[in-house]
Length: 135
Image (cartoon, rainbow, N blue to C red; front, side, top):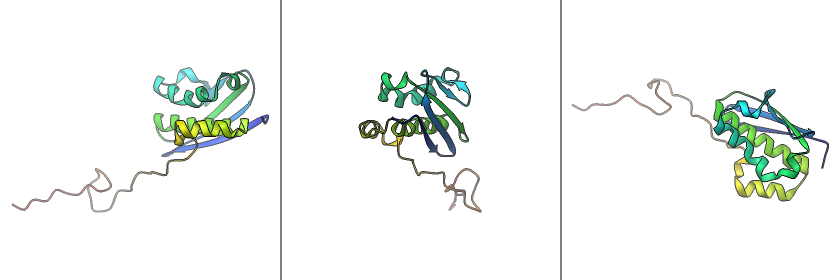
């Protein structure tokens, strides 16, 4: 195990950077404790921690900075950053395989992005066109 590790995560336009170091088992997101976030986001962020196991989590401190995107996008980005940092911190292929089996998106970025709106079409979306009437 190394004494410090970093991980990054991106989801849509949300970005997150996680740093792990030896500590007393704290998790702070943008300098705030985890319980200040919505419940759904908390559960999403805790997933890599529950897979990694209690023995690792109790002896580390995790600090995450995230920005951009919405609440769920940030939660996904934070989840990915924590998972990548844990793999780097433990230097364990077994943990990496656990994450990949559970959900590949914990370690691998999702390349999908929103399609840009095309000119001379309505503002409702990328492929939305004016309705055409034949009579």
